Amino acid sequence: MIDLDREGDVWTVTLNRPDKANALTEAMLQDLIAAMQAARAARAVILTGVGRVFSAGADLDAARAGLATSPLWEELSAAVADLPGLSIAALNGTLAGGAMGMALACDIRIAPPHAKFFYPVMKLGFLPQPSDPLRMSALIGPARTKLILMGGQKIEAEEALRFGLIDRIMPADEILAHARDLTADTVTAKAALAQDIKRMCAGTSQHSA
Image (cartoon, rainbow, N blue to C red; front, side):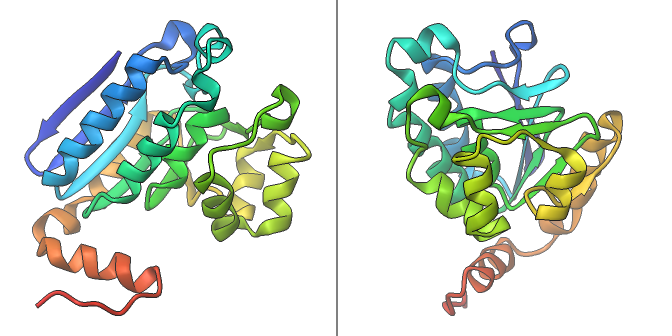
């Protein structure tokens, strides 16, 4: 249910459970973590899904069995954030719940016009994973983060773009190709440059020799 395609230095990781809205099971989270750890060897990583929904978050049965509070979510988002090369969330559709974490950890997020964004943790009686509010606040500010996490608001793609939650809206059938175009310079440049730019954006000053 997690597909990995290696095309040179660009790796594409795909959620492939469209009949269940790409809802994530424990096994899928473990596979995603393994894929992201292995993808440290890549110059660029694209994260996408099959169908009209990127991910509905945790599989409901698995969530009731404890997956909703599993440390695997935080481990996954950390693995994405630690990727040395460019990471792009080429969202094929709606992004919900705990699946938000891995997209927030990516460098760039692209989505189609029909995508919606929501994270109904309070309605379900759970806290979000610790890094998710921090990353979301860094993108859209504390008040808008509270609107989503505490107010339980479902955000449409255009509003998500205005907020800064996503970086570009494109037709669904063009997103993956556009993501691959964005990786071109990253793949041809020195890998160290991408790492330096990430550090500069994060406000750190260490530079590669």
